[in-house]
Length: 141
Image (cartoon, rainbow, N blue to C red; front, side):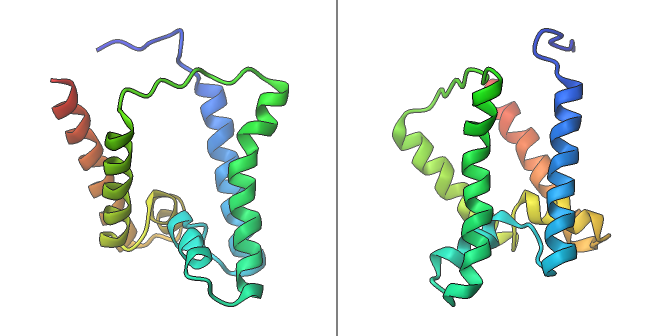
C-alpha cells in the first residue's frame, strides 16, 4: 500500500474536520440540536412547523453554498463520477435506506453521537465504515 502524496491533504482535512466539529458543537450548545444531516433534511421534507424549519433551511443552505464560497477563493478539486444517472439514483436510494435503517447518518452518529459517547452511535459508525470497506473492495476487485 502506498500513499498518494500528490493528493494527500492532511492539513486541509484536519481543518475541515475541525470546522465540522465546531459547527456541530455550536448547533448543540446554542439550540440543543444534533447536526445529523438526514434528520435535518427529513424535518424540512416532512413540512413540519415553519418556525422549526427555519434553522434547518439555513443549515442546509450553508452546506450547499459553502463549496461555492470556497470556490471563490480557491480552486475546487475535479470531481470524477464513474456512474451513470441510474447508478447515482440507485446509490442515493441505498444511502437513504441505510440512513433510515441505521436511525441516522454518518454526521449524526459519527460526529455527534461519538462525541456524546453513545454506544449505539459507535455500533452504527463501525457498520458504516465496514460497509464502505466491503463496498470499495467488491467494486475494485
